[in-house]
Every structure is written in structure tokens, then in C-alpha cells.
Image 1 (cartoon, one colour):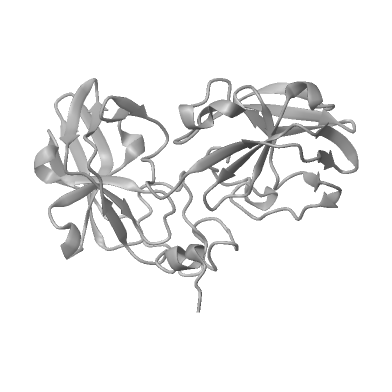
Image 2 (tube, helix red, strand yellow; image 1 turned 90 degrees about the horizontal axis):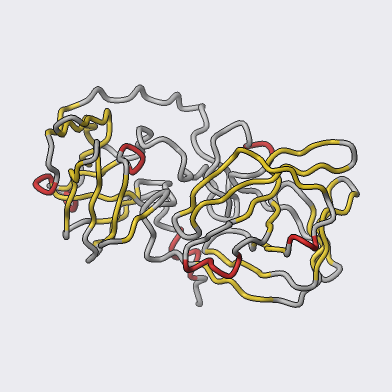
Length: 292
């Protein structure tokens, strides 16, 4: 019997996972390199969909001081975001705080010269990762793989994006109002995420208002956002653009994408169902990761 590859991968989502990397990994704190390792491991705690770096203790130029264990989450308190296409349980998206751990272990504060970071490290109670310490990406000023700056979170070697030009007829609507229409979109396919339709700015009929919101994606780079003025109302942060994307996403530079979760897409005359992801309207009160 054939197995869908996605299902095979997601069977392990509830477990602790790791994958060694041959890349040299460095992190900067208070202007000083405090992590420098050629023995890093990518680690996914249960229900995490993006990895963290874990390095041997001796590759950290600082003192690890045991920190208080976080308060336990009430059994009936939901943690994470719904993505029914991936998991029956809520998944932990990139902006779920590092302090939310789903595996046993000991948290540590990192003290390194003039710099310190509370709760920046976590030693897992797992024999396969003995001697390694998982690090909080957000607690450091900068991260590098070899000489390339890494943003948002470590890149997953099993995650990729493809950007393809298309002649499909894409129509974007909200509450019956036309937002955009084109037959020259660029389609961005990203592992485990909905297809995103990037449209030329001149094919957008709705009025776009620049937003102060910005996010960072490990694969696409820095995104800036637009609020949409239509039907006498303003809808905040409904669309985004990558002005200067990373090389993998260079073909969407300057194009506009709308959240599939918050507007209606009609593709080649067929109205699409809105996907349920961390960017869905019912989840907007929680911190959401960078745009897909």
C-alpha cells in the first residue's frame, strides 16, 4: 500500500526529532560571538514545525545557569495553532515562545560577559541529544550559517519553496468586493503551507495603505504589509510584499499577496475554500508567524 509522504513525515510530529547539520553555526550576543559550532543539530520538540539549533555545551562561550521551570499549562488550555491539514493537535508555530516546551528538560539562563539571556537555553532529557543544549533563536542578536545571516528561525532542510509563473485566472474578493484580478500571477508553493498567489501591483483594484507591520521569514526574508480599503472599511494587514526577498524567493520581489485565509480566491472560475492556518481570522488575537 502506498503511503503519502506528508503523512509519513507528520506521523512523527508528536515526537522529539533531530537532524545533524554540517554547517558551521554562530550566534552573537551583546556584540560578541558566544556560539560557534561545527557540530550543531537541528531539533524539533513535539508539535513544533520549525527547528531550533542545539550545540554541544563546550561550543558556548558563556555560563549556563539553571533557570526556574515554567509553570505547567492547564490541561484544558489550548497551546498552539490549528492546522487541520497537518495535525489533529494544535501545532506550535514559529512565534510560539521558546519557553513553551513540549519535551522534558532543564531551562538555563545564558551569561556571557556583558550579555545575558534569560531562559535562552534548554537541555533536553534525551540520551540521543546528551551534551547538547537547545538555544532560543530570538534571544540572540544575530545568527549565521557559515557567513550567511539567518533570519526568523533556523532553516529546515526538508522545507522548500518554489515560485512559478502562471497564466491562471486569479480573482480576489472580500465580501463581494473585487480586490484584484490577474492572469499573470506567480504562484509560491511552500512545504506544508497553502499556495500563495503573488500579483502585480497594477492588477490590484483595491486601495492599499502601507502598514507599519513587518515580519521575517527564514526562506523569503523581510515582509512589509498593506491594509486594504474597500467597501467603506479598512482591513488591516490583509496583504504583504517582499521588497527585497532572499534568493529563493527573488521572483516575487515587489509583488502583492493576500491572505488566502481572510479573503476569497476564485481560481480559473472555481471559488476556493479558505484554509485554516495560524493566519486565520479566529487566530489573529495570537501572535502569528511571518506571512507564508
